[in-house]
Image (cartoon, rainbow, N blue to C red; front, top):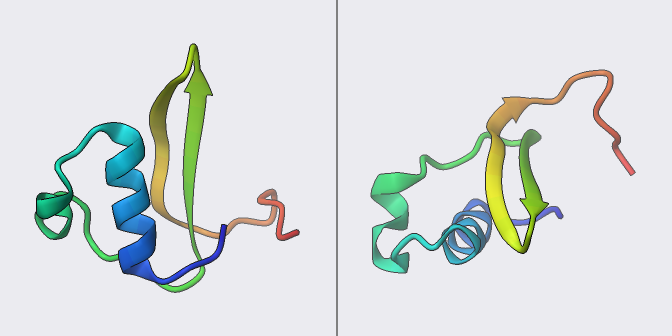
Length: 61
């Protein structure tokens, strides 16, 4: 997903069960062209990477 940092942080809060009113304190604004990776198992989300630099092994498309 590509989007603005506020939308990304609000989506992460929703998926991770974080109170939406705290998104600015809990999650820093991601850098441009940074990678955030979620993993899902048993309908539970886990934040695997947040604001990680893009690497040659990350799929672009």
